[in-house]
Length: 305
Image (cartoon, rainbow, N blue to C red):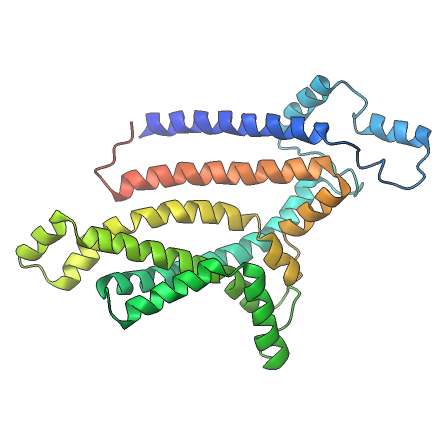
């Protein structure tokens, strides 16, 4: 296990380095810079600003300085918000985005797995068709449609929840539902398919032939193996929602990471864009490593070489 973790960690570090390098090259290939977007800026002032942020140095030297600072955990200063560092901006946004994301994914797991198991057990019955319908609608309809509908019915018409903003517990409900709807649909569909596949395996038939009860067969044998594909989905989903769902955050005015990234893209704020990209990549790579290890723990048939 230790050898496998070291191997995967090395690959993860190499992957991150490649992402950092590609992102750095692409960002410096984009025409313009954060300063030239300012109206009537004095050339001398522009020169001084580039010197301050090291943008006057050769590209390879800028790259070396950036990597050196990155190893220290320093993502640099925002080029547009002079008093703020990228670390501070990401931390502020991440707290809200991660809270929203974890709640939405928890809702998706709880409801999606439950629906998928029940639908798989009751194939061809009413609840099975109900789950299929939910899965189709949930995957097909974009998050911003759910956001608008929930705002209209639950905030404007019924007035149960606030329309937008972020602060009290009531502000969480609508964005969590809007973001979690797609996860409920995807997880329910995947869990149903996986359950049907597992229930048709020979070892399930053998367990039934031994006289084990249906409850024991399903809980001890079927669910444990059927849930493996869900682990892969959860890892990818978690990496994504931890850094925010840009559209949902925008609709509900949630001050998450999506807010800072969108502003940075509009303003060509290189350091914020790169910091967000690297942060997201690091979470994604870490989650994939955790998924691989969990596979081996949950299913002894999988060998970690």
